[in-house]
Each structure stands twice: as structure tokens, then as C-alpha cells.
Amino acid sequence: MHTEGTLAPETHEEARAAFEAAGPVAQTVVRETARAMEFDPDEYRERVTSDVVSTARDVLFAARLRVQTGTRAEFDDWREANDEYEVSEVGSPNVDRIVWHAAPFARKVVAATYQDERDAAVEILRRQALGRIYRVELDAMEGAAATDVVDDGIAGDETGGGE
Image 1 (tube, rainbow, N blue to C red):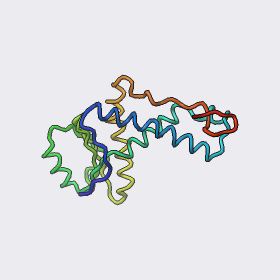
Image 2 (tube, rainbow, N blue to C red):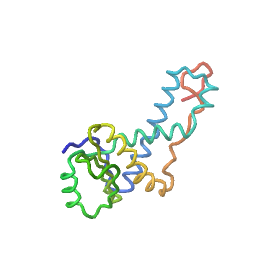
Image 3 (cartoon, helix red, strand yellow):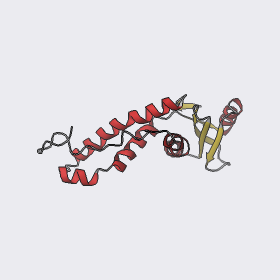
């Protein structure tokens, strides 16, 4: 069995804090990407929306999720030892390899089976975990999207907009 990633929040508050902490980083990534693409201030304001920043935040958050990869037998052993978790599994039940993410604060686990493409399965799993666990839990929390504010320009541009 192999583990990668670091994020498996124990409480709703930890989940919310990790999600919110990804917001400013997402804002910076989007702003610097727009700068590298040579967006002028008008194009930046037109194209860089809160949805763009939200998407970047979601990707950054999901990329940190702790996932385990292993065999079906290893996952079944994990399930036996953690029978209080609600399981959501995607993929074929006839495949021997599986990747999973457990969210202790929600007592839920999301799993995805794979044949050969472990890295692809990990990315699918992270999107599934974001949608099936964190989106549901975080959307229910007041203020979870407080970091989805878009700067009004690109820092350091000739018009003085930005930071």
C-alpha cells in the first residue's frame, strides 16, 4: 500500500481552514498565469472571474488530499478496520487495484478502481472526493467561499492595478 498527499482533516474546522487557505494561493497562481499570458488590465478584468479563482482553489485543495493506493484486499482490510465510514466507490468492482481517500471529519471514504493508470485514478479520486465529500460539507458551512475575491488587475502592470 502507498500513501501520498497530506490532507485528511479530522474536523470540519480543519477542512474549512485548509479550503480557505487555498484561496489566496489560487488568486496568486491565477494572477501570475495571467501575467505570463500577457493579459492587459482590461482583458484580466474580463476573463479572470471568481469562477476561475474558485476552480484554481479547488484544484489546489484537492491536490493536497491524502490518498492511499493498494489492492482490493488492502482496501477491504481498511474498510473492516474502519466500518464506521460511509463508502462511495467508482469504477469497476472487477479490478484489483484501488485508490481511496478517507475524510475523518465526515466519516466518509471515496474510492476509485484502476487497472494500469494509477496517476489518472488518483486525480479522478481527488475530484470525486472534492465533489462527494468536501463540496457538500464546505458548501454547508457559512463563509467557506470568502476567498473567492478577484483582484481588479495584474500587479505591476503599467496602469498601477493589482496588489
